[in-house]
Length: 397
Image (cartoon, rainbow, N blue to C red):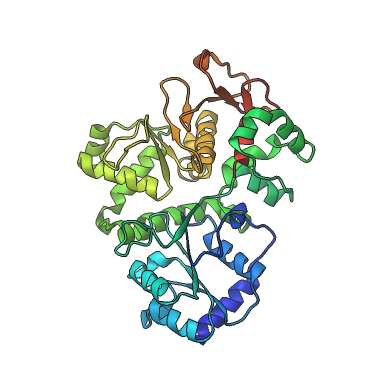
């Protein structure tokens, strides 16, 4: 166990506090059991280490461990928790719990057996709390984490301190928001860079290898996490890769189930399950006309890649500006809002706001006569009336 403490000390010491994600302030760190889910590469590990570095002194009362550590080849998680508590342990941070075979049951046992121990764990976006063998939904406070917003990207790269702005504030006070941002930077100067290389926090590490890293993330998700967490036979992963390639080269993609099924050699039910898996892994985003009651065997009306950086990594030939605008809007809005496909316009948000997406010359013909209808327009710093600068929607988290 001493080796785990040594590794923990080293990682916490090396963690940088140059930039801390805003989700840090949203997590109820004092809860007894906290879970943070998210796609690979969005910064879950960094968040844990920063929390420890910011709020805790190095010592035996807190411990960070990754569940893929070789130590667990011969030891159980429940045994670690018991030894840790006996040594005065108070806070146990468990990274990548999905890599530990019996994580749900043992976390339940730890929660029930050690009332003074606080546990924070991270896992894949595929992690199921409610349907796991041991139901943790009544015990764990869960959070979803995604990649950087445009606001966070600006705060990292330009050393700004722009706050989160709600959708309601943007719709009411877009002019004031534009003035406050323009007083410090020209947002459009950096918007294109964000769309290409700004979503995953590792863009700062080796920019020249950024897309290679994204491809590595995609392969790990499909080749390791899907078989591990959804039981997909490794022999069929190539079919899901083939499906992702078809979607990436055609987004926004309107699926024809019969034709795609014939092309990759799977039946309808299997294909719909694959489409569901791709959305669960945060590689794609499915849009329906009504999100109420949707299930994995329901065909989506449209499919987008989850973020614009994925598009540049997987299908550079399909990164036309219209596609990038819609993908950006959907990615930034769907994180904390419901987004559906309307009968008019491009997106229906929270069953209340209708949005049309376009450039600065975009007219409102398609949404004329609709209440609470807006244009999210690219290439404008300042909006007016119902025309909102598209970049402002990157300040929602």
